[in-house]
Length: 324
View 1 (cartoon, rainbow, N blue to C red):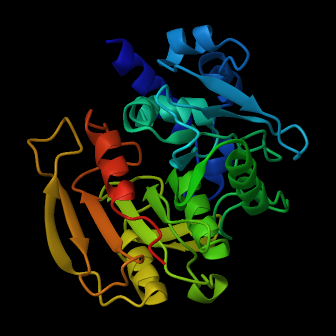
View 2: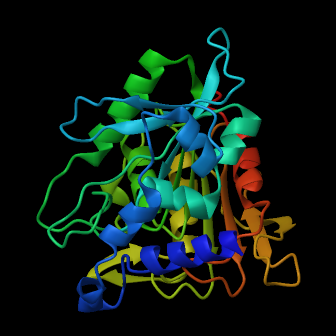
């Protein structure tokens, strides 16, 4: 029951995010304060963090970006002599990193799988909503926070403080965070091994992105997404591509064949009868440039996620390091 309540709270908060229904995106209720009461982590008391989030060690790292510190979750089995993967989770519009983790449940995976884990917060836009400056469609207007530089700075700082495996640096994002994950793959392909986007999208204009090398890409999207349409659409009259076009665009960037090969099915939605998520990909991609689309049949913008969701995502990331 507790997990359901938290998931419901997450749904209400994140659903106030980017919309392809014009000005409705500006008319959402203010959920920032509610998010803070649930999601702000305690960074100075590791025992309190462990009680509230099952963390075993949370360290605050002060960023040189003004007023943008973040927490690093360090798994109990971390060995400074052994390079560890780094996973960065990017939240949706109007949410927070800690709130997004309640939904995705990646911190337990960090503890059991041994990766360093960061879920930073975007800064509020003029509407008071936290938003990543990702693509032209989502989700910052007339502002210029350099979130690409900020996230790169996080990678640099964490790598200086801990033994980060440079070929296993991963991004996972939801909605606006998915858009931002694609932006990072465009801007810093040499640093990012793989990204996972749930209900995000890349640039509609393929010429706006010029990755320096292939990046492994996984797009997860529900066919009934009411906010970021599976088939593409517009946010405040700026186009974004659909899920299939997004992966086709990245297949072209990576030098893959068309992403049409059936690779099986997964059960990611606990409300379905099983196997509702179809997987397509391409066998003709570079070794470090895989592209896959996981389509959740009848899935919404914030689909119910089965307990295996986090493990499936991390399995996919671990299988796709930067091999170059």
